[in-house]
Amino acid sequence: MAYLNEQERDKLLDELKDMKFNRAKYRLARMDPKGRLAYYRNVQMSGEWHTKYILEGLGTIVTLVEVNKAENTQAKNKQKFEFVNIIVEPTPGNRT
Image 1 (cartoon, rainbow, N blue to C red):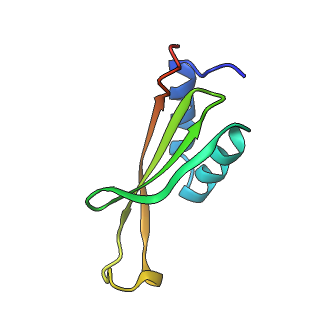
Image 2: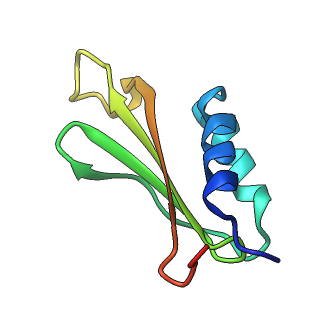
């Protein structure tokens, strides 16, 4: 499988922008047989939850960013996440 070049990564970004979080997550999970989920809803920055997929066969790393819009942050089952950003970047081995 060939690595994605910059134009193909931009096309992937545009495609994912129109999707909801679960649909984007499903698309990334099925896109590359060598791909894997690095982490799910991990707090990397204050107020942001990141989900990261490493698509090794495509030479791409995709990070889905969410923010929590729930008023009561104490109740774990009442969380309301809003899908706000997508970060698509090449892996270190991808030089295209």
